Structure formats: C-alpha cells, structure tokens
Length: 113
Length: 115
Image (cartoon, rainbow over the protein chains, first blue to last red):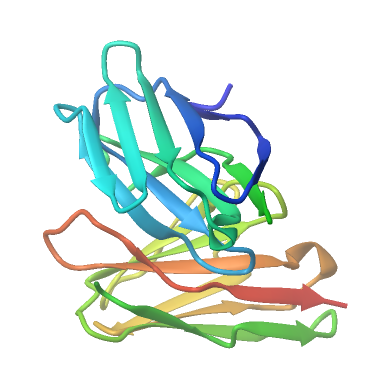
C-alpha cells in the first residue's frame, strides 16, 4: 500500500470549471506536504507547500488544504484553463528523512474546451 | 525560483551502448543532487542521492555499476547509463538541493529510449 494515495487517477473537465483533487497519506510524522504540477514529458513544478501546522495555501487559481488529523490534503483548481492539463502529484516529506520524498501516483487532469 | 536544467532532453540509443545525462543547477549551488526514474503512469522513484565530491548513495535495487553518478561540482551532476538495455528506457529526472535547505528543484527530465 502506497504511503501517499491520490484520487481520482484521472479527471476530465471542461474549461472554466472547478475541480478538486484528493491526497491521502500515512506518512507520519512529516515535515511538509507539497503539490506539484507535471506536464507531459517535463519535470515536476512546485505549486504549494504546507507544513503540518498549516491548513491552507494558495497560489493563484490553485488552493491546497491540509487536515493533519485525518491525513488528507486536497488541491482545488478554480476556473480551469486548457494549460491546466497535466498530472498533479502530492508529495510528502518525512520529518526524520526529509530528503526521501514520498510521491503519490498523481492525478491526470485533462481540460477540454 | 531556482532553475535546474538537463541535457539532453531526449536520447535514443542502441542496446549495449552507454548514455550520459547531465544535470545542472543554473542559479544556485546544489550541494546535493538526486536522480529519479519515472516509468509511464507511475510515480517518480528515487535512484540515488549524490553529494558534491562524494560517492553517490544508491537506493535498494539500483545497480551502482550500471548507473554511474558523478557530482564533481556544485552545479553539475551526471548520470551514465552503462550498457543500456530496452528495460532502461524511462524518464530520468534530477533535482538539486542547496546545502542546509530542504527544497528540491527538479529538472525538466530526459527521455531515454533504448532500442
């Protein structure tokens, strides 16, 4: 069982619509949780980073939330654009081994016009 | 933000040949560099961690004699896939980390196809 699980695996939405991606993790204790965007054939780009004490973090149309009690995080995308089509990866950094990032398998988002 | 580049972006080679992939930190000094491999529709998997001037530390199951890592300077690390085979075909991504800092900055990746 993966320590970081994401849902859904894939998602198709129409341009302009909102969507929410989910991340459940079992890594504990952890230093921080990040959401990355990975375009096809490109490396991951950081969208948000939250420590265990933070509940929410925004970056433009991206808003991440974190519930450390239930070990859940979500990434909400507002007013989606075609360029949002990508994989979104939830990554958790263990507190005692911060270099060993634990990656979720990602959610593949496709935005259609 | 900090920028990491990789070269080449994609490479096709024949089975049995060696391929070198470069990872450069362009605007910061990467005391530590990480090499990841990503198969289609899968997560990034850490292959090895290298500190400048030291031997790389490989993850379990990664052959150090097959994946040679050199981190000779604070801005350059190289990964050489020796005697490449079709099963080595993958997307290789590096990341750089400044000394004392936690954030890893990822490169754009290198697509390797071994025929």
